[in-house]
Amino acid sequence: MSTGTRIPLHPVACGEAIPPLEQGDRLTRDEFERRYNAMPKLKKAELIEGMVHIPAAVRWRNHAVPHADLIGCMVVYRASTPGVKVYDNPSIRLGLDNEPQPDATMLIEPASGGQTRLSDDDLIEGAPELIAEVSSSSVSIDLNAKLRVYCRNGVREYLVWRVHDREIDQFVLRDGRYDQLPAAADGILRSEQFPGLWLDRTALIRGDVAAVLTLLQQGLVSAKHREFVNTLAHPSREGVSFLERTGPSS
Image 1 (cartoon, rainbow, N blue to C red):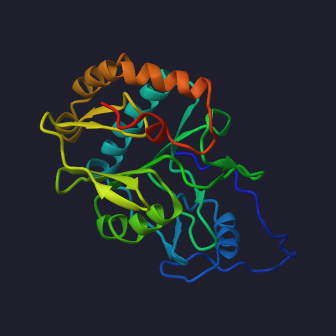
Image 2 (cartoon, one colour):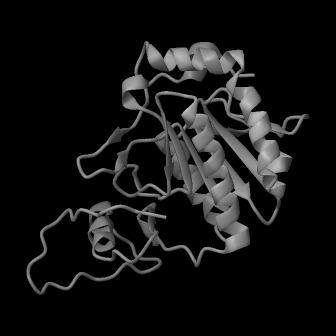
């Protein structure tokens, strides 16, 4: 997992000691970034509501494998959907007190009507259309503090894969709050923000990637996906979601 080259936000005088990030530190976003930039060996740290969170070691079965499977599905979707980007563990600036680093992010490019931008120092600013977290030891923060931050800042769709519980929660932003969508009777998770992103919940949870991709290919040839691709190629109003323009996907 590559985090890229970090660009310091503040000049550092010769010999000046920069304190390390510590779990539970209370910092401004600028100070968080200054300390994070000075720790290139630290692969992941997040600022949530002004508090620093440094995840525990990444476990193979409970995080790395489901993370890779989910990202793989998103990349397949992106390959058939011009104007959509997928990011693995990006730092995202959300206001002055929050800089999460979610496991997986899918967004619409600004030129195609998306609501984010890339900063001059190569960070995402603003709320992506979809964020997903693979949650084992981090369930409490993913379903509480992060959920509130993502909702307040306008992340339109939020997925939480609760690995130990063998469940995937789907939250959709409506009227300024998150509605948790019930699992469909057929077991298919259908993204509202990215039509055609159909995920077989049961197959994904059990690690049957072949079955997941078989269903995803069906979503990619659906009428809603074709309509979405056309909308991305000819965005009518920047910042207005496909869902608001067309209604729920099927």
